[in-house]
Image (cartoon, rainbow, N blue to C red; front, side, top):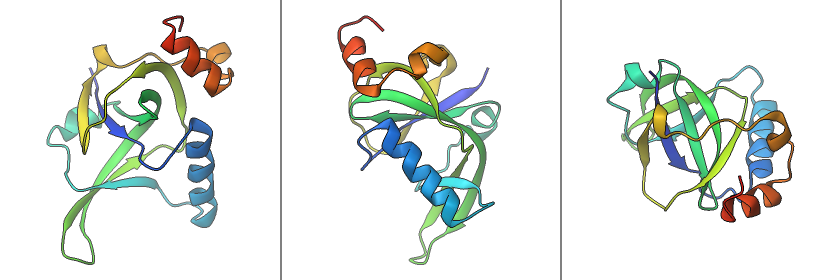
Length: 138
């Protein structure tokens, strides 16, 4: 069973903004692997890379996920060790779930991960999804 990562999407206000930002980066570097750089490498890398995803928390809710396709260690220009979480370009909407703020990333067990939204739910405007989730209807 895969193990997932959970991370705050700092500076992003909506799922649409994350999609636009990802598309912009892809256009600036065609063919490059999309990656999010973090300080720590997951020690449970084999489990994370066995079908795991990075679940993004946007505005206090787990909102979307991106499949993890690789981990790359490197040293930045200041001499600090880092890890690039390599991500699939596809951003998949998940059933919104509240999540408190935290630093860094956290492991997320498969059984605790929110399910992907059906096509009908994924096409729903994000503000409506958030409101229905807050009311316990989604």
